[in-house]
Length: 117
Image (tube, rainbow, N blue to C red; front, side, top):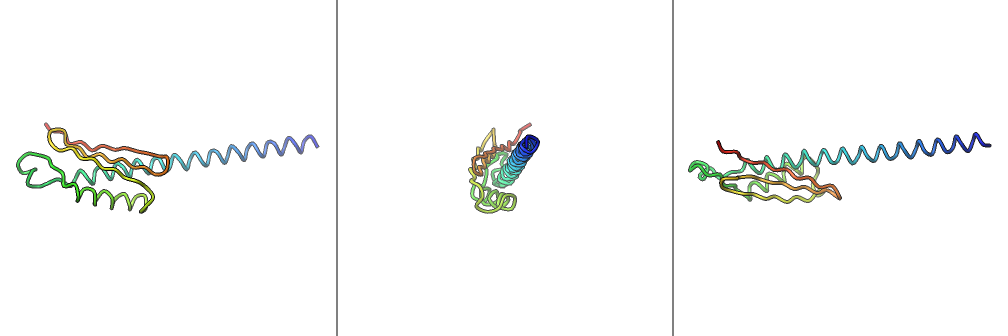
């Protein structure tokens, strides 16, 4: 009887460890996917610049087109309705596009900056 109790305990502990490892891997995978999606969204939004302002040497973003393109890219990466996205743009000398994605309790931020020479 003692051997049965010890064996059952070992099986329960091994099963619990396996379950926790699987849950951890799921969270890490979701975390990485969210980071890639945030990077892609920031890059897509940063590509939508105003060509007339760029011809004059300024970087100015087309915010509506940038938001539309970032949402389209993120929908393809994560699936529609599975995340919340916030985009911020900054024009001028320190031009940048910033995407913050949140899916459940996970939150990732990515910034795409233009560097002037």
